[in-house]
Image 1: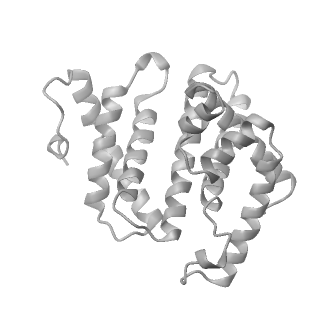
Image 2 (image 1 turned 135 degrees about the vertical axis):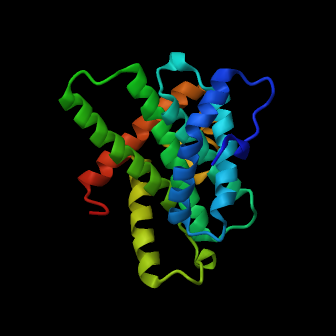
Image 3 (image 1 turned 30 degrees about the vertical axis):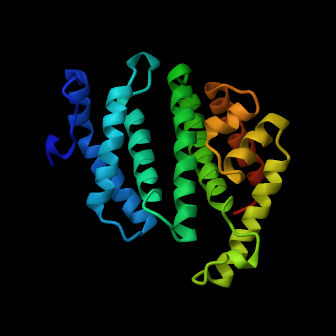
Length: 238
């Protein structure tokens, strides 16, 4: 693969061009991962094309002063661009839409955690280990919440290809997660409900309750952590 797969602007700086070159293999990797995850009738090349747009956006918007490595920033932008690209192709099967929402939720949570790590590096190896466990738990919880938020509440919404076992399992986990969300403090609950169940962006949900983008991101990460603890305490999904 060469730089010809993306089209930088003439005004792009040498630093931007270097980031694009360095990120091409990342696009390949993420496109392959998503292709395996969503099993959708879309070619690997189409997914890569969406990813290249995300890479260009990442290269142009990258700010080294934030302390976030470019590879982490680019991974978020590339994954988000591929998800947006697939969603924009038209009507999607419900299961695929659930998977895309799950991946999107994981990306939002990952972005907040990456920025938190950059702002407050772990002090000890033990701290780093605990941070990693919390990081993985948070991403898994966000993915689950993004997925089950789209579980049908009415029989008319059921996909004919869904098995009874899958529907029952989805519904039980969805009920447990909705209950966990209902127990969140008010700001966290409103943000999560509006973003996941109201299907507005995280920024829009934050603004609707009077929060800035940065505070909305922090409140979201805190809410996901609380839901993860609640689910673990109640042994849901174990």
